[in-house]
Amino acid sequence: MPKANVNSNHSAIWHKTVVYGIVSVMLLPILATLVYSLSSSWGATILPDGFTLDWYGQLLSDPRFLAAFGRSLLICSASLALSAILVIPAIFVVFYYFPKLDKLMNLLILLPFAVPPVVSSVGLLQLYADSAWPIVGTPWILIGTYFTIALPFMYRAIANSFSAIHLNDLMDAAHLLGASTFQAFWLIVLPNLKKGLLASLFLSFSFLLGEFVFANLLVGTRYETLQIYLYNMRQTSGHFTSALVMTYFLFVFLLTWLASRFSAKPAAISE
Amino acid sequence: MSYVNVTQLTKRFGDNTVFNDIHFTVEQGEFVTLLGPSGCGKSTLLRSLAGLNPVDGGEIWVNGENITHHSPQQRGIGMVFQSYALFPNMTTAENIAFGLKMKGMGQQEIQTQVQQVIELVALKGKEKHYPHQLSGGQRQRVALARALVVKPRILLLDEPLSALDAKIRKHLRQQIRDIQTELNLTTIFVTHDQEEAMILSDRIFLMNQGKIVQQGSPEQIYTQPANEFVAQFMGNTNLVSASAAKQLFNLDTPHKVAIRPESIYVKEAGRHYEPHISSPQLGVIKQHQLLGNVIRYQVEVHDCELSVDLLNRSSERLLANGSQLELLFNLNEIQPVSA
Image (cartoon, rainbow over all chains, first blue to last red):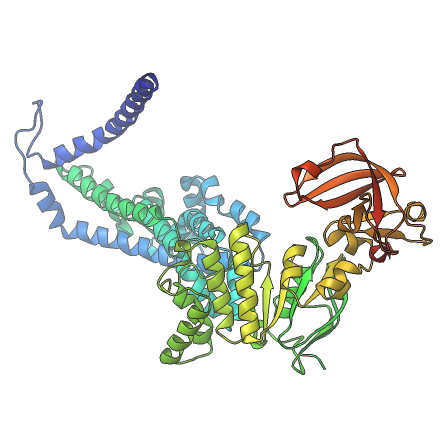
């Protein structure tokens, strides 16, 4: 059927055009930033005067940048570790003992989205300003806040992994074979969550790494994270900040790629 | 005292009674089936025996020991689930070894035992496969092996064949029965499929609405149904009212009367019939269905529609709709049944 073939070729070309068009529009600013970060100077001319890696050299040898990057990694890892440790057992309890609570949990995890960051950070500032815990301006308040932002991503991904296994049957089978509830959780449930957990961790990580509003309002320069550093460097050379943005992008790309690698293969389900 | 004794077992969910006052015994090495329509409480009863659902009353004794309030881990009962419930993160060998590991058995001993049971269920060569790499029948055999390897006192099977297609199902049910016989394993099987129950079981406990309505060998349950429900649940049957029974069989009874479609004959000219065969009744064929080796005719006799099964011996003997025939009834096979 040559005609149908021609038709499908046409539509394929059309679809590809749209997809590549959108991709190139979205890549354009990133590519421009990349070129700018690699050029020695790019002023009144159409093309840059020359290319150099100096800006990257400057950036990567700036101890302030390395410290800010380190702080960001530390805060993100700490909040994600906290959320993994708290959320996984919580979801297990919800799914295994109180399945009806899943609906309530789905509402609860939407709360961080319902309140705009500026509003909730002002609220947090007021709440903790005179509190017995003087945590405003310390990384601790940021870890706690990031925990709440990561919660929806973590909960959904892990809850999906839970629904993909026959949790009750697996637990029953393990119990009958002599395992305690803790052993069953540790040896059977946890390994089956691994893929969903890793994917959600990498995604949340790259998301939290780019967080600015909470970091700026709650802590600001008192604990300079990557985004605050970028903000404070806005007056310096555009080439330098471009190099900074590209470094950050590369890191996030790497994380996103890892996340998609882990979620690409669906978890082995006995169905 | 029997190997398994269940007395007055009762289970309620809120106001809803799942099963009530269940009594039965199972001998060592016996294969019994809990048979019943879905929602009759048979699966919940099985789960209660395993300790997965607590009971609200009654006792379960196994080998002289009261296990009613033991945890599932302490009961020494193996179970195979309809969903297989294999651990997706473990290979065949690891799945089977799990129970032995939980017992704290040594690595060497575990390997020997796992190998033995893998041979028993014919899964050699699949040791390193993960559950998602196995077919449905293979998965269920892994589940069976996993339950067998810990040498349970009782094996419980919860509709293990329901998710499989017809051919594998027939093969696997024979395999289950062979292994059960070889190990002389006390087995309780749950199914809603009366054919499966009749083929496999030494005894059948037929359940309806949370009660065991009849227990006995497959022959007893099929030929002597205790009530209307049993008669209709086991295979096909004609239930005729008391007044129609008077007309058709000249039988005085306050109950309805059951007669199987295969116990009704078509009168053939020149053939001598035994005295237990009734006098002929004139009937008209309303419709017929070809079931393969059997043709099922719907015949109207005295305002009463009966199913009559005849062997499909040759296409020339196929009777057309609307044709008249004389029916004979095997009077030894008619059963008055209470409601």
